[in-house]
Length: 174
Image (cartoon, rainbow, N blue to C red; front, top):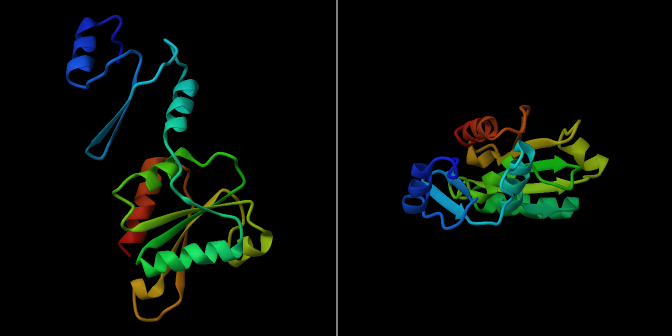
């Protein structure tokens, strides 16, 4: 909202949103508001704004670097009756959408988010990962029925929050 050219916006921002300096970034999500007062350039390009927001969202996923490490977090997920959501990737930066899920309390009780950078070919083959980035939801079968074993469901969509949220919703409510 432009508070420089419209004084009413400035009053609203200061009184209702509790903004103390301009420009500021405010994140709204699931009944929570996070006000982040930062020193920002007066004008941000779209890409600069995205990078600024991206830098503010921390990565709460469990980073793994070996098959043993992955197995540890999968076991931990199953012991906690959670669905493991594993991102296989080769990037230095984790997708903002993926990081957002690990950050939101709406998902924490049901999912454990794991990221595996540069997984060896044998591990990618074991889990059916043909190209990266790839997200897999790994569910302990006893979570669904008494057969045992694990069920692996791959996400085929683009890394856009609302599409990924639909995937997680469907996986959660098998």
